[in-house]
Amino acid sequence: MRGITRRGVLAAGAALPLLPLPTTMAQGKPVPDIGLGPEVDTLDPHRSTTIVAGQLFIELWEGLTTFAADGAIVPGVAERWETSADGLTWTFHLRSDAKWSDGSAVTAADFVFAWRRAVTPTTLLGLPEWVAPIKNALPILQQGKAPESLGVEALDDRTLKVILEHPKPDLTVYTAYWVLSPLHRPSIARHGDAFVQPGKLVSNGPFQLAAAVPQSHYALTANPHFHDAKSVAVAGANYHVTEDLQTELKRFRAGELLATKEVPPTQLDWARANLADSLRLAYRASTFFLIPNLTKAPWKDNPDLAVALSMAIDRKVIVEKITKGGELPAFAMTPEGLAGYTPPKPDWADLPAAERIAKAKALFANAGYGPDKPLSLELLYNTNELNRQVAVAVAAMWQQTLGVKTILSNQEFKIVVSRMKEHTYPDIVRITWAVGLVTEYLNLLRSRANTVGPGYINPTFDKAMDEVDQALTLETFQEKLAVAEKIAMADMPMIPVMRQSSRRLVSPKLKGWVDNPLDLHSARYLSV
Image (cartoon, rainbow, N blue to C red; front, side, top):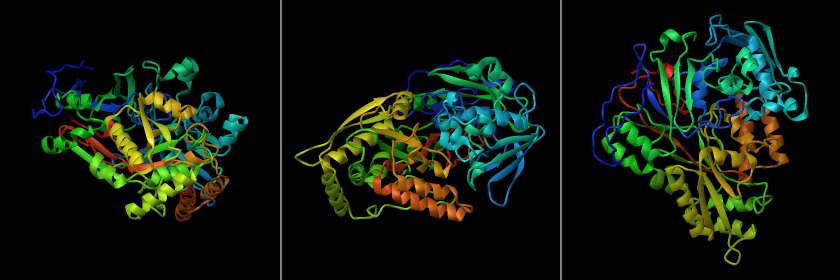
């Protein structure tokens, strides 16, 4: 991996050309340098709760299914599968050439081991809802049932049987995500929790971990034992951490990065004019949330307050005047375009502004606030220029409409995520949820979701989600999900603001990059 060499310091708005620095090379193949975004919380696929880390996980591990360049679900370690008539039993048949980066075979027992580790309480699984469909997963996690009772069994080295708690028509989407990837048993036995460190991590994905420098970069090298290694045109990839979007833009312009994670909102118009051949704006299946802490007053047991704040936000102004990157207003928790689902809107979404604001003021008064009792709150967000701009705009709208005084607080991404999980933020936290699992937006609101989520407890909503779980067909699943979403929107336990767009700079030299709603781009599909 090369060191970073700067050709002077560039002002982001200066009309200078992109400097064509040479691409990193190894074994005669290129090694693209790509922006990752903020520092990841962990490289342990079971303990992470961030989608940011997902970019590294899809490079290092491959599940039973995986993501194509366009985000579609395709066979991974499993070459085929079948489902029982009742939808409760899935049988996956593993490919014969699936290998770990040390050359040993990937077997069904590796999946059994990994999934049992995931649900073992001492693992501290970050996203328990992602394994919840598997038989006994939650009783093991929450009630002390034996991990060996998990509904997964290796019938032989190449056949994996999975038994579910309830039908899951989109199970093959879940199996593409890292929580259900296999793990290399000998390296975990040897190294324990340190198995994710460079030199110790044995992976089965297209790449292996060569270096991990906190707040700097992650260097990956191609896995020569990957079953599709012949089609991988790069020798590896370097993923660079950055919290400062202006710095990332400068590095792209200096030729140090072939792709950025984002584009600073203040430089978007400039990029349209000066880097049109590199600018990529695309729909991203995501929700930019403002999440009240429902475990504390004044948010606990006071849904009118959150609904009033939600109604006071002019989402059209935010996406058209503030962000301006192709974002879409969001009124529902779940984004459009996942598993064919179209989320419902609240009744007030299409009201004229004056009517909407009048209703917001009435609910605000019902919640106990108004001119004689103003509300003060803290809005916590991770350090990022786009987040700051939206936070400032929302605070101004709340002030103008409801007289709310908002204190803006920004911290590093990892700290914000930690405080969200621990419910130690005083009022409202900003987070983006961007995942291709359609149920997982509303699963944040189940009363059992005690690790990630606002602390929402509504038995009626829980019952509606239980009915979602029992849907055998995709059509019934979508209908039941809409019913549950309407119940949640009446309380607004999470305030959706917008569907964020993927806004990146991608060098024309970097081939194979396909914009997709998941905004996941494995280097296995790239060439330079």
